[in-house]
Image 1: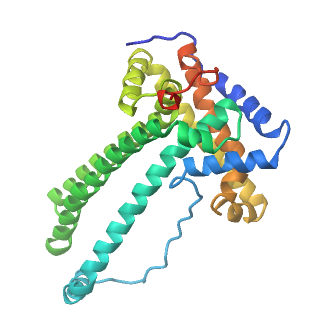
Image 2: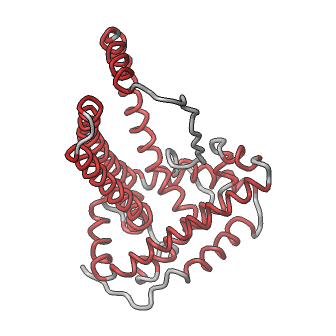
Image 3: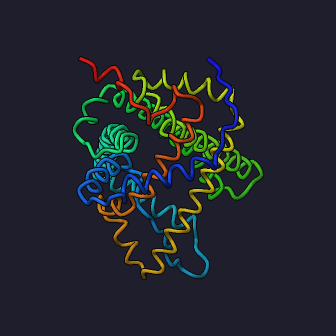
Amino acid sequence: MTLRAQNVSVTLPVGQAVEHVGRMLFRPFQLEKWLAIGFCAWLAHLGQQGFRGSYGGGGRHGNVDVQQWVQRARGYVLNNLYWIVPVAIGVVVLGLALWVLIAWVSSRGKFMFLHCVARDSAEVAAPWHNFAREASSLFWFRLALGGVQLLSILVLGTGIGALVWNLVHRGASVGNIGGMVLLGGVFLLICVVIALIAKLTTDFVVPMLFLRGGTCLEGWEILRGLLVGNLGGFVLYILFQILLSLAIGASVLAVVLVTCCIAGCLLVIPYIGTVLFLPVLVFQRSYSIFYLRQYGPDYDVFSPSPGPASTLP
């Protein structure tokens, strides 16, 4: 069903979200409440949070015989396949298992954190159990999305690797360079689309499941009706979210610099960093659901509701 909304604003939810953060976390300030909500937020953002720095290593100066380096690396690998293969398989299996575990726990956490923000509560156990069915559907959806991305990396990465191999051994050619640019562009496009789907799922599909229950695909069917009727508004929402992210990132960087990186060291500590960063996380979660509320009372996550079907006996 297509819904066309009028007078939907991307700026109005900013003030509403700021007011909600103040009321929820600071009036009054309760450490126990921060710790409980921070735990839910930490679960919701597992695998996402953290401030990463990138440091370029100092390379060797002068000419480097790339082909000779490749030949040496190839020879080393071929001579040590007896231990490289099982170690590589073990690392891959362990990494996939950890990824699946994080996706499952964070899917539960997203509903727990949304429950805390929408109901201004510090409950942990109740939303963990009450939204088990919806979180399971979200988990399988995210797993499928991650599988598509992983398959894209394998297929396109193999193609780019083959082109790089030809470039090293046969020299540069228009075909090799053009193929690398094309495959790189396709990979970048896939990553953008997947990131956009993940963003819309967290911001809007999760609240819809929170209100109505059901599966992630059913939530996406409802969101599709909103997108078809209000595409311009959602494009503006995404662009404004980018601006908000840049502003938040600049503010965090300023705090880190002013505190001589002490704040940065604290923010990278698991859970502790999330608790310290909680006002920003609550603001971000509040902003999306205040924006969604503008599309009608059926999308108002803040209104009292019986909850999803999984909460019923």
